[in-house]
Image (cartoon, rainbow over all chains, first blue to last red; front, side, top):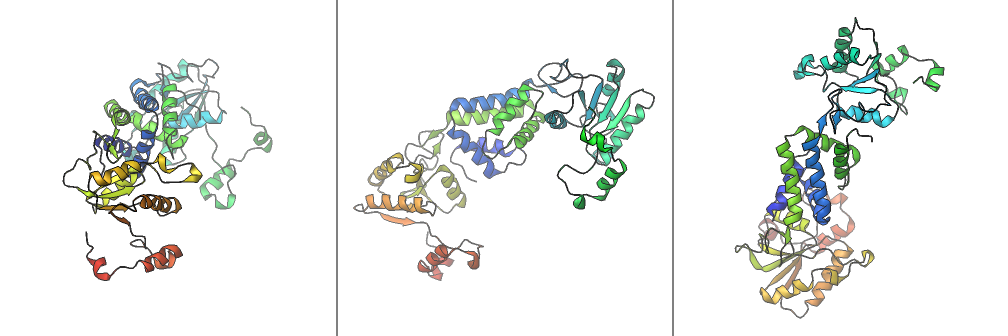
Length: 207
Length: 207
């Protein structure tokens, strides 16, 4: 692509570095911003830069935060005795958007994956273990992606908790709402039968 | 989507304002930038803001420019006697990328479209007419999109040029390279037969 302006070319190249954005899309975004008010574009650029510059990670749960503690950990209405363990910030956002969980989180920053060279000591596991006596935690809910790495991580952490009087659960695996039995894989369908739940509980879930 | 950080939320909302970028993609872009060096992100934001702040439009052809004249108009190697008339900056970039054109451009800034309320006086038509005697222009090539609005604009401008001794041409319409006759629409196929060219010229085009 040949540009007649270095200013435009630089901006397009920056956009094209973002994941999933090719040269043509980058040009479309840059030309869109060219049509906006200068004020609006400077707000865009300032907010992006400020996010990277000022964002912090919660000292307790390693979620992103604006202060030392994230909004969730500093919220006195949330039940500190229930910790939901997730892989990444993205999962916190996904679960929060359901508005079904009133406990707190712990972001591991990944899952154990020897093939990718990720060992337990690279994850936020020791800080999770330290929170359990400190916050009198009663339940740890694992909300990790259902794959070998996720299951390995659950197994590893729950072994460390063998002596600790804490309830350990994992989010239910089963057929998605709106999904069709016919197209479900055998693993999921099998587990959903093995871990069947009373209809009474399905209709009015215990929170 | 519920965020636990206002800084992140602001950045995601800014990305989501861009065309073709939804909330989920915006989050992916923001989290990607969070993982980059602070330096890199500030370069991104600065280049985008600088593009909007400092970019100018060429006083001659209305293409984007870093100075008063764009790189193309100020290039003494380009043939000023041939003007290629296009709708937008995007078309200049597309034609430049072919490296087949050595003349100069004129960006109309749109095409005549009564339905969208765009009349001839909102386009850069008078400045085009003024360039013809000034630059001793010999040929005007219309490279507009092949639709009613494009054809109307060609018709309107060429009527204004009736008395002017200048050659008026339009880019060839025909079957795309790699296209299949079977799937071409009748209009295109019909025109490509009516405007057939000698094989000799097809093999070694006259520049």
